[in-house]
Length: 231
Image (tube, rainbow, N blue to C red; front, top):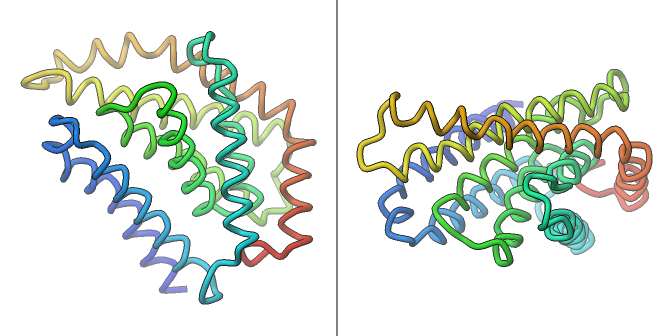
């Protein structure tokens, strides 16, 4: 129990510390350092959260498949700004496989999909934001037989997508694209991003409401059949 609490505490505080600790590297376009450290910490947290000593090959394959599906869910709708399925997919993965798996899938999906959309100072923020949304949904719904209804998952996912992911990603613009960030310069960034964040949140809500009976059940069956991640 103490091991899980310590892991959670270090995990939640460690990633923001990485982003801001590497702020000079991010500004100088060396954002891969921060991205690599985020993935490393996510993997470490996942390993520590598992009761067994090492991950199975089938678990790595499951993570790779979820990431690939999430990348396709973003790339396939490239012509529609903020209309993406990535958030819904990694949320469903977190609910079936666990919060730490969800964070890893969320952060990896943003890193990989940005190969097509373009890497930049925003990448570590996108990784952290997407991973955190999945992580929180995993904490709320993972291994919960109650309250895991379609409307509940869709509403919680949509709200977290808007409030958490939107705020964190907008922060990359507010903090790093101004020589001297102040409340006066940052506030317009957050206000102008609200419409885009709302579109993303509504898309995620609809996708979760529609896909939960299908994708969620598939993920659940795979987790139980192969005993993935201590299920």
